Length: 133
Image 1 (cartoon, one colour):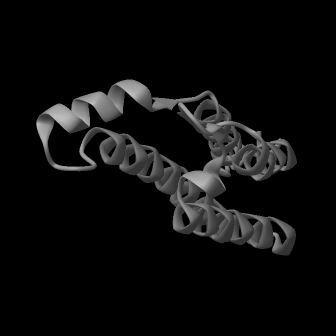
Image 2 (cartoon, rainbow, N blue to C red):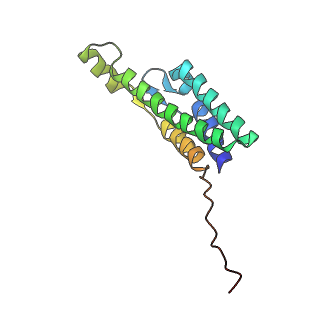
Image 3 (cartoon, rainbow, N blue to C red):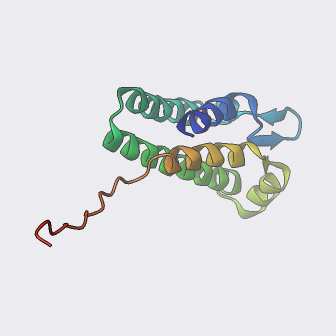
């Protein structure tokens, strides 16, 4: 399950559309924001490293960081579209022409799969058996 989430999260920023720009067409995450792209892959690389080293607590932490970063990245792009120039009229025109695309959904699905692939191990207390009976 973790490998599926890692695969979806690795493919989505490169090949899926994240933003629709009127003249240029669909942009992936690299074309939308380069720093956001590299930090996303850096955090995904931490998840992959923890997965292959079998460090469950580090994997759980890095998967939470990755999901949090995806949410922060989405909000940053959304607010950048709606408040780019700082003038209400121009920002309104810009927000009507630029549209978020379905690549964000695929990135969130991959991040949720990565997060849900780690289950907390809870050891159930075994009932004591009275051998004297």
